Length: 202
Image (cartoon, rainbow, N blue to C red; front, side):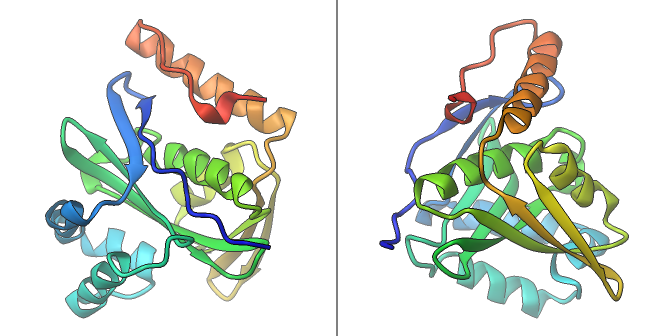
């Protein structure tokens, strides 16, 4: 199966607090904002992302983000020019990709990881990727909740302090309902219409 690059478009979204943001692919000019995002995160936040701490790990990962193949996309969420979160996807095989997230310390609870997951799943489906996999620390309850609440089919396998997750990217009626409910709640907080997301299409 040929490997197709992710769609290079900007998705206009509404966060859980009703504010507007955008999700798009990482660009070369984003490096200063990405560096600021990682450097501003607490050690606890970085540990739940990398299972370790240290600026060496962070700097190596940032280099890696800007030296990736087109079929290994990185998505960013921005509000008023500030980077709120990032999701990077690594192709494992033709049907499976690994996904991981980092959200700024002051931006938790806004639904950023969920919105990044929705966008990444949409592009994954279009490129023939049927499954996302992720390793999440068992103590990282918010991230586990992101996957379980997203509405997609999820399998969880606890393994020595972390949880191996496998999530289908198929847009089932259950996933569509969960997405619609999230955006309806955002509309209620904003009091305006939420731009229609590509992920909501049947």
